[in-house]
Image (cartoon, one colour):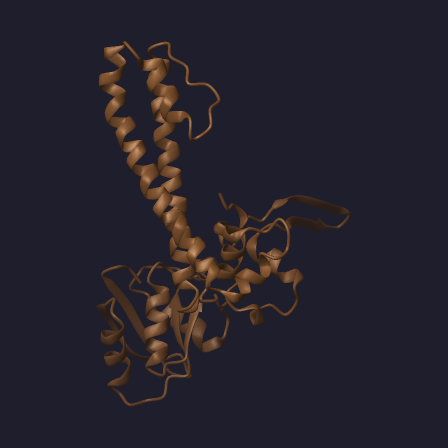
Length: 270
């Protein structure tokens, strides 16, 4: 699958290819292709990528038994083949036929609006901090040091050390204005998760546990989505990556760093 095109392969129970085609990445086009024979499809597999949630939801609403495949597991399986190309969708179709695949939970429609403002806020905050670091670096070339300063006092501090230095001001001023504009938009983005947290009963309940705040509770709520998909509460930590790696072979038993798999947003909430 890609942003422009999707390669589709349909196989029967004996692994014979019924039909192959390259279609537009659009649920209506894919559904039209799958429905034209009038046969029952046991499974429809999608390899996880940026459009997976959209295609998964749209095809599920059309009555298809859609399964989203874990991309690393699919890659390992397809690497065992002699030739792995984007057109060789038969490999994924074969995985669906045999059942040798690992599914990925697709965020529900209710979780998507909770997650989107968190991702936008994190991205804007990273850009703003990057701009601040750039300003610090440029000022150092003129022998000016901002030093350790709070976000709120950054503006006043930069203006203070640039006073009377026209050569540095001409270069830094446009970047400084861009940083201030980012900070204004970050403030707007920061309000969106807070509003969403107030309207969600599960988030408000988690916020009663000190020191859990609105951002932490909302992020956990949006990334877990459906608690019923975890058989035990201890599986949640392993799902999001804080569980240490472990290697055992003979008398060797070594514990390493954490996995860092799963949703990164849950492990680092700035």
